Length: 368
Image (tube, rainbow, N blue to C red):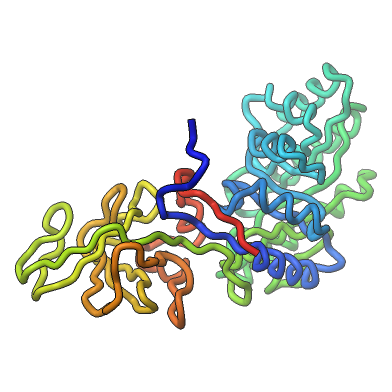
């Protein structure tokens, strides 16, 4: 049985006011296009249910994007009523039944999937709603233009499926304007062909957060906002902070080793704090001997290898550091800030991975 009180001091704090402001800014930027708030992977580690409830309650978005039927069902189970689009390619095809029952819109990216969703809808006696995914250069999932036309014909003639949208994924909106332009042109040509075949009122969408800001032409009818909503794109306000408290302090002599594999050796007498956060919480082992932690408003270097549950930090220069002092692994303390971009650079990855890897054992605490 879970304890009624959170005893371990490690936590992720999510400021709802920051998410609200980011969504308001995106909504204004995208207008008149609608916002599809992407809350897959537990809202990039921020908590899908809580943020979806906020966005729906305050009318900040049109609907939500998830990666799987299970993620969509979790939103429905929490009382979220807004449109939900499953952005992943569904398999096994029996999952169409669960999606249709829960009023989830599904992605169709193959003729086989089109036939399966129509059959599932006929069996249930309930119309399915889908968006067709066009492959324009991402190389992941999606149908080529000739297949998209066949898929549309199959679905529209079935009588059991409503085709509500057409979309694609821009692979390089943040790095290659020319390629992005080629993708958008191909998408526009395909949507025009569908219109000639009688398709009317399709929601056309291609833009992620980056494209929506950089390429106004990409906004079309809907923008799929993810990373910017969480404040992890330039010009937006970070919403998540990863915090804990010092649980142990010791003084070590010159020559003492710290952590596994003797990866750090003290070159002088030092004061070292242990904090209860490690790679079991999503704080990567790659931060060993590289990352800083904020304690007492100062940057304190991680010493030795990050372990599963604990990390050691140099607090020699922090006069008031003691057991119970706050330690910020990601976020702001005083005038200093450690950003997800900084940690991503140290780990050789991207900001998405830094926040989505914060594990479920770290409680999310929501603040206004």
